[in-house]
Image 1 (cartoon, one colour):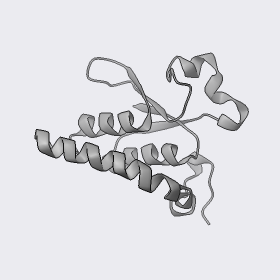
Image 2 (cartoon, helix red, strand yellow; image 1 turned 30 degrees about the horizontal axis):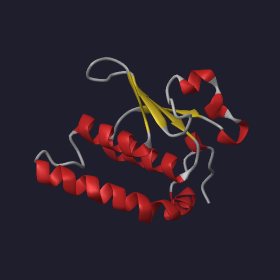
Image 3 (tube, one colour; image 1 turned 90 degrees about the horizontal axis):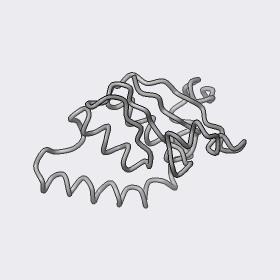
Image 4 (cartoon, one colour; image 1 turned 135 degrees about the vertical axis):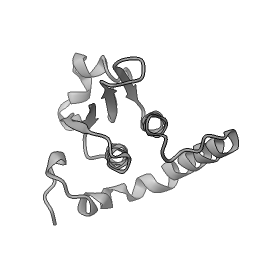
Length: 127
């Protein structure tokens, strides 16, 4: 099981979408950044940069692991599932470049996903 430390921000949505696409079981831990949830000591123990999203994979290859920074989480989940990332070196770097390019171009569009991805786990009602 994976714990997703989430708040409905563009980066938070990216990880929620990736977990869904990967078909991984996860639990949402709401981390209210408007009320300082990211500064609580128990959260900083998971995400040293005190930012969401972050995950804790309780079934990591070498035991429980926490991963923070959305790009690192996306790469971790792709490698964990063997999906969305090629095995060959050239393909992996192509995905890495595309991911960085997408972060620049896609993030401004993510607030629109609140309507496209209604789910009560995230505190959103269907529109």
